[in-house]
Image (cartoon, helix red, strand yellow):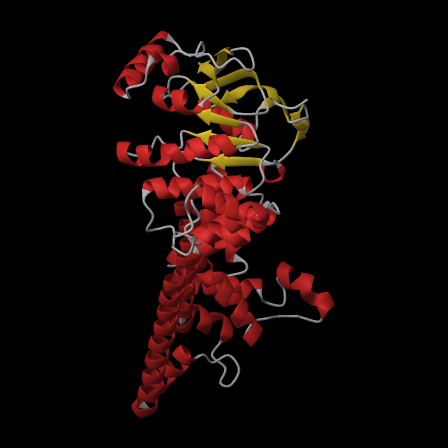
Length: 202
Length: 245
């Protein structure tokens, strides 16, 4: 969210053809097959990559097959799911609310925090739900860059796959039902929270 | 000096603004002219929402001159847009306080609420307000920012006749209580006659006629506007004493 918000704001404000190139790049993870994305991410976080060379002085040699690597990977493939709804919300708002805030003496950052963010609330909620759903459900990228090492980089979706492969249906069933129930509860909580905020405004 | 004077010019899309203007630091100055003549553009330029070349001095304070350009949020300007543009996530009170807090104008809140008859609306959300109520809130919100110049961009244009009739008396009360100059964009002759102390006329991005300061004549109006005025005065039952003063 912290990364997606400035990108979304910037994409929603300025109009230039080359900006659409950036937008396309940010949106790319939606259409790329997970294996393609995972492959390039794996190259990027491998010990020989230029990116990792920058991190060598900090004692980090590689993020491949580590939990940290998984987190970085998740952020990349979830970015479009966060950027798109937030950008749409900013665009739907139009320039007027920010102009009004300026005429009411709010400096740009002040206006952004007190006008743009609250008005784009729905975009943030949609982004949160999409990112959450996508992160819980992602399988391909995670398997590529994490390797599914038990106890270290084995996420639930990969674990269930392995259980099914080994014909341990009982355990797979318990885990899958747990994920379904947890996801439902989390989504419900988010939606109820949004309703509460809505009513508080009225 | 007190008063507002400026020269603003530049191009915006296919439109060219080339306005030189001056009006006194009191009362309501109407800015009239056909649609597309640049009234709103000039108003936005004075508010600092659109940047043009030139110079602008308000009440002795330089808002723009050459490379100097005071951004909107540092200008003591109150703006009422054509559509009320209230902040949808705040209540009526929240809207009024938003600017009042930042301009240290909370002291004027009670007066503004009273002047515009908002006391029963304060805790409502802005979504359920009528068009006339919304504009009254927008006007109060602009007043409590302690502006040195009030800019009104056709505040009645989006309202139906009944809502206009409801809000005009409030505008007249504001006019009487107002201690700062106001620029009132309108092409409605009735509004101009009822509210304005003087008229600036605009055509094709230029100020075409500016009556001498303090002269409340209607010389800035073209023939068509004058005819409309006469007709409106007749309909409203006004005698020539008011319409042709």
